[in-house]
Image 1: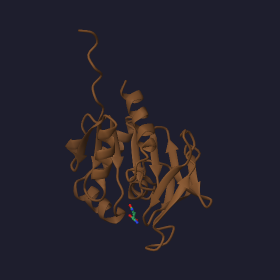
Image 2 (image 1 turned 30 degrees about the vertical axis):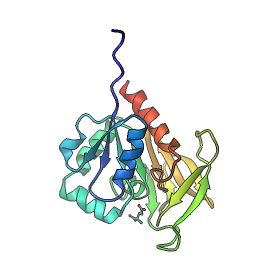
Image 3 (image 1 turned 90 degrees about the vertical axis):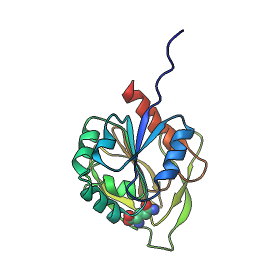
Length: 193
Ligand code: GLN
């Protein structure tokens, strides 16, 4: 036998509410093992975590009910890569879990009518713009110096990075473009190595 195959990274997906299954499908198609996270014990041993889209008020209530906020902050403090999309971006901001140093404005493009698709040039991603699916999406209004804005729509920040945490206002898990998840998983692999 030569070297054993590297173990698959285990990526948790917060599964209290919202679109967690599409993230799981995309992560698994890229070779990760996924685990649905509902209680603090589910966070143990994770190599990465995804906060999906959904409804951030409901998600916040679930986080409170399950006492997940402090364990999530501890996971982030250990340097575990995290990806938040749409409501997940909101959860990362300073008014919610406070894992990233920015503020999000909810439903920033308008409440119902502004569900739309738009090309987003995401800094650091090769192969042209990402086709972003925006559903009652937030944008980032202000951010601290540690946050790099990676992409904008109409001059509004919709993708950001802070160390190994990534936030996108659109649904990167829908459609066929998996480059945001690939970027995230490249950091998961690098941190776990
Ligand atoms: N508008 C939702 C919220 O404020 C987010 C929408 C989404 O995740 N698609 O929580």
